[in-house]
Image (tube, rainbow, N blue to C red):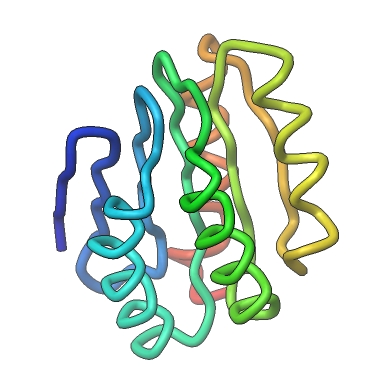
Length: 130
């Protein structure tokens, strides 16, 4: 699966529970309306998903988009196994610290220079049938 809006692209890989979400600019509610059904379909298929959240020139969420994100996280509290966040700014890392109460996922933040490490960590154990 691969979908794109102006602010987000979502890619999943056949036979894998890893979802790559790349964001730039500002996320709007309309972006969530497009990609949330796809993420929920992957959760139904795999039970739990791992998310690689890659931020490029990311400016955050509109208020309505932030609400959609909170609702998704609350509804899927146990459905996200890991989140690897790749970003450039300290506020992006802080944003994921604030997300921790809303998801059971293990969350790790990586600097842009550590993208390879983030990809290794998010895939760890997937091929071994973990």
